[in-house]
Length: 483
Ligand SMILES: Cc1cc2nc3c(=O)[nH]c(=O)nc-3n(C[C@H](O)[C@H](O)[C@H](O)COP(=O)(O)OP(=O)(O)OC[C@H]3O[C@@H](n4cnc5c(N)ncnc54)[C@H](O)[C@@H]3O)c2cc1C
Image: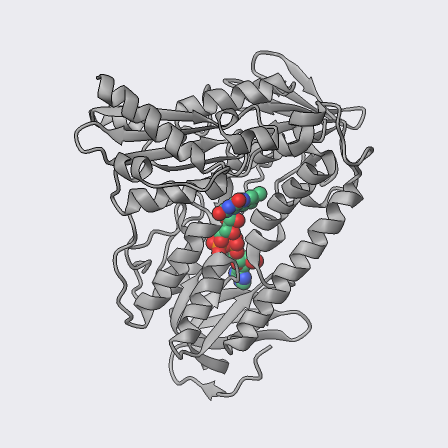
C-alpha cells in the first residue's frame, strides 16, 4: 500500500478538485504479465511506478486463473496419471489410482503462492508501489481507486498503462452456476472431478482443458460450431492431434451449433441445432473472452473500446489514441498470450520513457499446452501455399529418435517448411512431448533468417528429441535433391 508521499490539491477541473494521494511517473492498471513487465522496466529506468490491482493478490489472470493454473493442472495430471510412462507400461498404468480434485488443488495452490511471492519480491526489490482496488479514470491523468474499507483515493499519473486483461465471455442464456456449468476461471477451483465433461468452444483454452480432463479418464465431448479449429496451426499437425484424441476416446463434435444449455436432474444438457442432446456431469463454457475495460470509465479520458471491450493501439509503441495512455496485453486483443503480453508491456514502458528499442522480431512462437502439446512458429503450409512460395517440407517422427525410444514415445511429429529458392526456414510445427520447448530452436533459426544448411551442418546432442530437427532437415533435403 503506498504511504502517499506527495499530497496535492489540483486547481481546476471538477474531478481534479479532489485530494490527490500520490503522483507517479507511471501508473499501471493491472498486474498481469503486461503490467508486471512494464512496471519492472519503468522502475529499472528510474521512474516512480504505481501498480493498481483489483484482485486480492498480484499476478493477473495469468497467475490466478489462466496460464499458470492450467499448466500446473496439466503437469499434475500428467504426473499423477503416469501419462508419460504409458508407452512402456500400457494404457492401464497409473501412478496414483483414484485421483481427486484435492490432489490437483494442493499442487496448484503451492505453485500459485510461489509465483505471487516471486512477483511481490520483484516489485519490492524494484521499489514498485502496489495498491489493491478497482481503478477508474476521472480525467486523462487522474485515476480513482476504490479501496476496500478505506474508500476511494485519487492518483495522478504522468503516463498510464492499461493492462487490464480480459474476463470470460458469459452470455446471459448460459446457466452458469459455478458448480455444473462453469467458465474457464471457475474450472480451476472445482471441488470434485466429474465423470463426464462437455467443453463448448474449441479455442486454445477449451481444447487445453478438454485434453487435460481426457487424460484423467473423464469422458470428454468437445463441441464447436465451426467445422475446423485452431486454424492458425498447420493442418497436418491438427490431423495428427485429432487422430490421437479420437484414439483415446474423446468425442469431437465440430460444425455443431449449440442452441440451448438446459438442466436435467441437476446435470447440464447441451442441445445442438441437429437435435442431439449431450448429457454430462459438468460443462465448461469456453467461447471467448472480453476486454476488462468497462469499469475504467474510458469516456473520461477520450478513449473508446470495441464491442469486445478491446482497445486500439499503435502496434509499434502501444500508445492509444491519447498519447500518454498506453495499453498492452490481452486488453488489445490478438495474440492474447502471456508471453507476448510481457513483451508488449516492456516495449510500452521503454517507449513511454524515451528508450529506443530495435524493431520486434518478425515471428513469435505459439505454445498450446494440450495433451499432447503443440507449438508452432512461422508460416503454416497453408499460408506458404497461399503466398505461392515454392516450398518443401521435412518431417521427423519422435519414434524415429533414440530419445523417443528411451521415453517410450509412439507419437509426436516435427515438421519444417523450407523455401526451395533460398533454402530459408519458413515455419516449424511440432506436436508431441516437449513441443513448447523444442520450438525455440526453430524460432532462433527463423528469426536469424537461417536455412536448411544450419540443421544439416550442425551437430545435435544425442540422444535428444531435438535430433528430430536434423531428421526433418535431412528429409526435406532428400526431397529437394530429388526434385
Ligand atoms: C485458461 C487460460 C490458459 C492460458 N494459457 C496460456 C499459456 O499457456 N501461455 C500463454 O502465453 N498465455 C496463456 N493464456 C493467456 C494469458 O493468461 C494472458 O495472455 C495474459 O494473462 C494476459 O496478460 P495481461 O497482463 O494482459 O492481463 P491479465 O493477466 O488478464 O491481468 C489483468 C489484471 O488487471 C486487473 N484489472 C482489471 N481491471 C482492473 C481495474 N479496473 N482496476 C484494477 N485492476 C484491474 C485484473 O484483476 C488482472 O489481475 C491463458 C489464458 C487462459 C484464460
